[in-house]
Length: 138
Length: 142
Image (cartoon, rainbow over all chains, first blue to last red; front, side, top):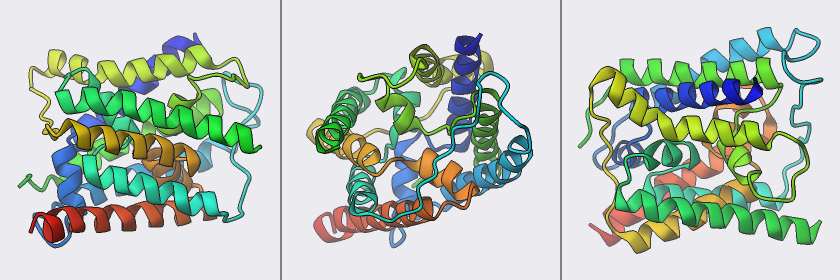
Protein backbone atom coordinates (compact mmCIF):
# COMPACT_ATOMS: atom_id res chain seq x y z
CA UNK A 1 0.00 0.00 0.00
CA UNK A 2 2.77 2.40 1.01
CA UNK A 3 4.52 1.64 -2.26
CA UNK A 4 1.48 2.59 -4.34
CA UNK A 5 0.89 5.77 -2.34
CA UNK A 6 4.53 6.82 -2.72
CA UNK A 7 4.44 6.08 -6.45
CA UNK A 8 1.34 8.28 -6.76
CA UNK A 9 2.93 11.08 -4.72
CA UNK A 10 6.06 10.92 -6.88
CA UNK A 11 3.91 11.14 -10.02
CA UNK A 12 1.96 14.10 -8.61
CA UNK A 13 5.19 15.88 -7.63
CA UNK A 14 6.60 15.16 -11.10
CA UNK A 15 3.47 16.48 -12.86
CA UNK A 16 3.83 19.64 -10.78
CA UNK A 17 7.45 20.03 -11.89
CA UNK A 18 6.48 19.53 -15.55
CA UNK A 19 3.36 21.75 -15.59
CA UNK A 20 5.22 24.51 -13.74
CA UNK A 21 8.19 24.44 -16.13
CA UNK A 22 10.61 23.72 -13.30
CA UNK A 23 11.77 20.47 -14.94
CA UNK A 24 13.19 22.54 -17.80
CA UNK A 25 16.74 23.67 -16.91
CA UNK A 26 16.53 26.52 -19.44
CA UNK A 27 13.65 28.03 -17.45
CA UNK A 28 15.50 27.62 -14.15
CA UNK A 29 18.64 29.26 -15.52
CA UNK A 30 16.62 32.15 -16.94
CA UNK A 31 14.99 32.62 -13.54
CA UNK A 32 18.47 32.83 -12.02
CA UNK A 33 19.59 35.29 -14.73
CA UNK A 34 18.34 38.49 -13.10
CA UNK A 35 20.43 40.71 -15.36
CA UNK A 36 19.84 38.85 -18.63
CA UNK A 37 16.95 36.82 -20.02
CA UNK A 38 15.10 36.89 -16.68
CA UNK A 39 11.99 34.67 -16.51
CA UNK A 40 10.17 35.21 -13.17
CA UNK A 41 7.98 32.08 -13.57
CA UNK A 42 9.76 30.07 -10.88
CA UNK A 43 8.81 32.58 -8.22
CA UNK A 44 5.21 31.57 -9.00
CA UNK A 45 6.11 27.86 -8.66
CA UNK A 46 7.60 28.54 -5.25
CA UNK A 47 4.66 30.76 -4.31
CA UNK A 48 2.03 28.20 -5.33
CA UNK A 49 3.84 25.37 -3.55
CA UNK A 50 4.47 27.29 -0.34
CA UNK A 51 0.90 28.63 -0.04
CA UNK A 52 -0.60 25.13 -0.48
CA UNK A 53 1.95 23.54 1.86
CA UNK A 54 1.64 26.31 4.48
CA UNK A 55 -2.13 25.78 4.76
CA UNK A 56 -2.04 22.01 4.18
CA UNK A 57 0.64 21.28 6.81
CA UNK A 58 -1.35 23.21 9.41
CA UNK A 59 -4.47 21.18 8.67
CA UNK A 60 -2.62 17.85 8.59
CA UNK A 61 -0.63 18.50 11.76
CA UNK A 62 -3.80 18.94 13.80
CA UNK A 63 -4.08 15.13 13.52
CA UNK A 64 -2.62 12.94 16.22
CA UNK A 65 -0.71 10.83 13.71
CA UNK A 66 -0.35 10.30 9.97
CA UNK A 67 -2.52 7.77 8.13
CA UNK A 68 0.19 5.20 7.41
CA UNK A 69 2.90 5.75 10.02
CA UNK A 70 2.95 5.67 13.83
CA UNK A 71 3.99 9.33 14.21
CA UNK A 72 4.97 12.53 12.41
CA UNK A 73 8.72 12.86 11.81
CA UNK A 74 9.48 16.56 11.64
CA UNK A 75 12.94 18.17 11.70
CA UNK A 76 13.50 19.67 15.13
CA UNK A 77 16.88 21.40 14.79
CA UNK A 78 17.05 25.19 14.79
CA UNK A 79 20.82 25.78 15.06
CA UNK A 80 22.70 27.41 12.19
CA UNK A 81 25.96 25.51 11.68
CA UNK A 82 28.67 25.67 9.01
CA UNK A 83 27.16 22.75 7.10
CA UNK A 84 23.94 24.73 6.63
CA UNK A 85 25.93 27.43 4.81
CA UNK A 86 28.51 25.31 2.96
CA UNK A 87 25.99 22.72 1.71
CA UNK A 88 23.49 25.16 0.18
CA UNK A 89 26.38 27.23 -1.26
CA UNK A 90 27.78 24.19 -3.11
CA UNK A 91 24.25 23.23 -4.13
CA UNK A 92 23.63 26.76 -5.43
CA UNK A 93 26.76 26.63 -7.62
CA UNK A 94 25.71 23.31 -9.13
CA UNK A 95 22.13 24.54 -9.59
CA UNK A 96 23.38 27.65 -11.37
CA UNK A 97 25.71 25.63 -13.62
CA UNK A 98 23.26 22.94 -14.73
CA UNK A 99 19.79 24.32 -14.01
CA UNK A 100 18.83 21.09 -12.26
CA UNK A 101 18.03 20.46 -8.62
CA UNK A 102 17.31 16.86 -7.54
CA UNK A 103 13.54 16.65 -8.20
CA UNK A 104 13.56 18.10 -11.72
CA UNK A 105 16.62 16.01 -12.62
CA UNK A 106 14.70 12.81 -11.80
CA UNK A 107 11.68 14.16 -13.68
CA UNK A 108 13.95 14.67 -16.72
CA UNK A 109 15.64 11.27 -16.64
CA UNK A 110 12.97 9.56 -18.74
CA UNK A 111 13.57 11.94 -21.64
CA UNK A 112 17.20 10.77 -21.62
CA UNK A 113 18.94 13.98 -22.74
CA UNK A 114 22.73 13.37 -22.67
CA UNK A 115 23.21 16.18 -20.15
CA UNK A 116 20.66 14.58 -17.81
CA UNK A 117 22.29 11.18 -18.17
CA UNK A 118 25.60 12.78 -17.17
CA UNK A 119 24.04 14.74 -14.29
CA UNK A 120 22.09 11.97 -12.48
CA UNK A 121 24.96 9.50 -11.72
CA UNK A 122 27.16 12.42 -10.62
CA UNK A 123 24.37 13.71 -8.35
CA UNK A 124 23.86 10.28 -6.79
CA UNK A 125 27.63 9.96 -6.28
CA UNK A 126 27.68 13.36 -4.59
CA UNK A 127 24.78 12.37 -2.32
CA UNK A 128 26.49 9.13 -1.39
CA UNK A 129 29.79 10.95 -0.69
CA UNK A 130 28.08 13.51 1.56
CA UNK A 131 26.35 10.79 3.56
CA UNK A 132 29.57 8.76 3.86
CA UNK A 133 31.54 11.82 5.00
CA UNK A 134 28.83 12.76 7.50
CA UNK A 135 28.83 9.22 8.94
CA UNK A 136 32.61 9.29 9.36
CA UNK A 137 32.51 12.62 11.17
CA UNK A 138 29.62 11.57 13.40
CA UNK B 1 14.51 33.14 -23.88
CA UNK B 2 11.76 31.16 -22.20
CA UNK B 3 8.14 32.32 -21.98
CA UNK B 4 6.84 33.83 -18.74
CA UNK B 5 4.18 31.34 -17.57
CA UNK B 6 2.67 32.66 -14.32
CA UNK B 7 -0.56 30.61 -14.40
CA UNK B 8 0.99 27.26 -15.37
CA UNK B 9 3.79 27.82 -12.87
CA UNK B 10 1.35 28.70 -10.08
CA UNK B 11 -0.77 25.60 -10.85
CA UNK B 12 2.31 23.35 -11.12
CA UNK B 13 3.65 24.78 -7.87
CA UNK B 14 0.33 24.05 -6.17
CA UNK B 15 0.56 20.41 -7.33
CA UNK B 16 4.06 20.20 -5.82
CA UNK B 17 2.72 21.65 -2.57
CA UNK B 18 -0.21 19.21 -2.63
CA UNK B 19 2.17 16.27 -3.04
CA UNK B 20 4.16 17.51 -0.02
CA UNK B 21 0.98 17.88 2.08
CA UNK B 22 -0.27 14.40 1.13
CA UNK B 23 3.17 12.95 1.96
CA UNK B 24 2.84 14.50 5.44
CA UNK B 25 -0.72 13.18 5.77
CA UNK B 26 0.13 9.63 4.64
CA UNK B 27 3.69 9.04 5.88
CA UNK B 28 4.24 11.88 8.33
CA UNK B 29 7.44 12.84 6.56
CA UNK B 30 8.88 15.83 4.69
CA UNK B 31 8.80 15.46 0.89
CA UNK B 32 12.44 16.43 0.39
CA UNK B 33 13.86 14.94 -2.79
CA UNK B 34 17.51 15.00 -1.72
CA UNK B 35 16.59 13.29 1.56
CA UNK B 36 14.49 10.66 -0.20
CA UNK B 37 17.08 9.96 -2.92
CA UNK B 38 20.14 9.94 -0.65
CA UNK B 39 18.48 7.44 1.71
CA UNK B 40 18.31 4.95 -1.16
CA UNK B 41 21.95 4.30 -0.19
CA UNK B 42 22.90 2.33 2.95
CA UNK B 43 23.08 2.49 5.92
CA UNK B 44 19.31 2.19 6.33
CA UNK B 45 17.92 3.75 9.50
CA UNK B 46 14.31 2.72 8.83
CA UNK B 47 12.23 0.37 6.69
CA UNK B 48 11.01 2.97 4.19
CA UNK B 49 13.34 1.97 1.34
CA UNK B 50 10.60 0.57 -0.93
CA UNK B 51 8.44 3.66 -0.44
CA UNK B 52 11.34 5.98 -1.28
CA UNK B 53 12.20 3.98 -4.39
CA UNK B 54 8.52 4.10 -5.45
CA UNK B 55 8.43 7.89 -4.99
CA UNK B 56 11.54 8.34 -7.17
CA UNK B 57 10.06 5.93 -9.73
CA UNK B 58 6.95 8.13 -9.84
CA UNK B 59 9.09 11.21 -10.47
CA UNK B 60 10.96 9.42 -13.26
CA UNK B 61 7.73 8.12 -14.85
CA UNK B 62 5.97 11.51 -14.64
CA UNK B 63 7.11 13.07 -17.96
CA UNK B 64 6.46 9.85 -19.88
CA UNK B 65 2.95 9.46 -18.46
CA UNK B 66 2.28 13.20 -18.87
CA UNK B 67 3.27 13.07 -22.55
CA UNK B 68 1.26 9.88 -23.13
CA UNK B 69 -1.91 11.27 -21.50
CA UNK B 70 -1.86 14.86 -22.77
CA UNK B 71 -0.18 14.20 -26.10
CA UNK B 72 1.94 17.28 -25.41
CA UNK B 73 5.71 17.01 -25.66
CA UNK B 74 7.59 17.83 -22.44
CA UNK B 75 10.04 20.58 -23.34
CA UNK B 76 13.42 20.48 -21.65
CA UNK B 77 16.56 22.20 -22.84
CA UNK B 78 19.53 20.59 -21.10
CA UNK B 79 23.15 21.67 -21.57
CA UNK B 80 25.13 19.41 -23.89
CA UNK B 81 28.37 20.20 -22.06
CA UNK B 82 28.72 16.85 -20.31
CA UNK B 83 31.73 17.79 -18.17
CA UNK B 84 29.77 20.80 -16.89
CA UNK B 85 26.74 18.60 -16.12
CA UNK B 86 28.89 16.07 -14.22
CA UNK B 87 30.39 18.90 -12.13
CA UNK B 88 26.90 20.34 -11.57
CA UNK B 89 25.58 16.93 -10.53
CA UNK B 90 28.37 16.35 -8.01
CA UNK B 91 27.84 19.81 -6.47
CA UNK B 92 24.04 19.47 -6.34
CA UNK B 93 24.20 15.96 -4.87
CA UNK B 94 26.89 16.68 -2.29
CA UNK B 95 25.65 20.15 -1.37
CA UNK B 96 21.99 19.21 -0.95
CA UNK B 97 22.78 16.33 1.40
CA UNK B 98 25.51 18.24 3.27
CA UNK B 99 23.04 21.08 3.86
CA UNK B 100 20.20 18.69 4.81
CA UNK B 101 17.92 19.63 1.93
CA UNK B 102 17.31 21.12 -1.47
CA UNK B 103 14.64 23.19 -3.20
CA UNK B 104 11.87 20.86 -2.01
CA UNK B 105 12.87 20.04 1.56
CA UNK B 106 14.17 23.49 2.53
CA UNK B 107 12.54 25.63 -0.15
CA UNK B 108 8.97 24.31 -0.18
CA UNK B 109 8.48 22.28 3.02
CA UNK B 110 10.88 24.20 5.26
CA UNK B 111 9.63 27.68 4.37
CA UNK B 112 6.03 26.47 4.80
CA UNK B 113 6.91 25.25 8.29
CA UNK B 114 8.65 28.60 8.98
CA UNK B 115 11.88 26.73 9.79
CA UNK B 116 14.76 29.06 10.63
CA UNK B 117 17.30 26.65 9.15
CA UNK B 118 15.35 26.43 5.90
CA UNK B 119 15.15 30.21 5.54
CA UNK B 120 18.94 30.38 5.88
CA UNK B 121 19.56 27.46 3.48
CA UNK B 122 17.11 28.77 0.88
CA UNK B 123 18.58 32.26 1.07
CA UNK B 124 22.09 30.89 0.55
CA UNK B 125 21.32 28.63 -2.42
CA UNK B 126 19.19 31.27 -4.12
CA UNK B 127 21.88 33.94 -3.70
CA UNK B 128 24.65 31.61 -4.85
CA UNK B 129 22.50 30.41 -7.78
CA UNK B 130 21.93 34.02 -8.93
CA UNK B 131 25.66 34.75 -8.53
CA UNK B 132 26.71 31.60 -10.42
CA UNK B 133 24.50 32.36 -13.43
CA UNK B 134 25.71 35.97 -13.39
CA UNK B 135 29.34 34.84 -13.51
CA UNK B 136 28.73 32.15 -16.15
CA UNK B 137 26.62 34.33 -18.46
CA UNK B 138 27.84 37.88 -17.91
CA UNK B 139 31.41 37.66 -16.62
CA UNK B 140 32.84 34.58 -18.37
CA UNK B 141 30.28 34.38 -21.20
CA UNK B 142 29.77 38.15 -21.58
